Image (cartoon, rainbow, N blue to C red; front, top):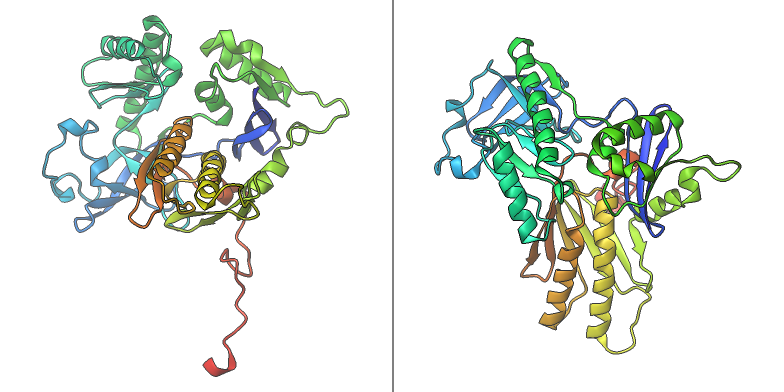
Length: 419
């Protein structure tokens, strides 16, 4: 059974996804809307750097946003020039333009922004200037993909781009057209605001967590949604009636009546604590060592207490297959992004290596965040990337230790010989 839990407090909203009691996803943000990815601003160019082919744009967030030249060129790759022009030919200091956040500020860095605007709806993503139709790769039926692509061509206007989401599968052309028309009106509202607003200024705010649950996370696999707040339940019910009335029956109000609170009754917090540990024990006795650096995530697979029963190759293979399952889950749960390097236990059998790679790819297709498995490196490491839009969940849940500043080591002073 797949459950979604929504816990509402005065300042925060937390949501968790569990499948057969196992935690798959966790999100937390301020009730007022803490996410900025997806927001659109009218910004002002404050610096153009030809050596980096990039510019810094003031969007009113304190730290200037970073705009790379690829995010200025046409959003359709087939329409981009083979030789990129200098960014100085496209932008000048003082120029004003609308930009959309694609990657939230992290650490000392400002947000990354783009002019490849996109507005997600229930069934599709609307891109006003992309001029193409795409279909979610998670829709496996070629006949359905062809039908949706044809519907997309029919409902889009000249120059517009549309990506049909997984939720579009089986939906009528009329439903898809209504979604596109709503998003088109929203974009027109943004452009009208941009004409008159001074820079910097917010033009469009991405919806909050509760709205995203309804828009993005309702699917036929979800059996029940438990919400522990009557007002939030009423809000969710109103949105579902408008967007997916057939799914209204899965909503439930959680009333403890003397029992443990919602997240406690489903053991969410103990599972979170284990998932965010540096060393994660697997059911067999093997373990993962998970290290997060500023540049990438490194995961080491160890046999630990698991010794197998046949030979070293079989032990390595079974451990790696089990590790692949857990790594795919933890990438979603920890919301890890960027480059990920996995040091699986060495396998000499090419068939085993292929099966581990295939299994990991299969599991990552279930991830709503885009993942790309690059493959095995010459050193026998597995390399993949996961789209990075915001600070990972660990950064939102934990604060760096004041003593070690997050390194896990405490300085004790140089030895006498080094003084």
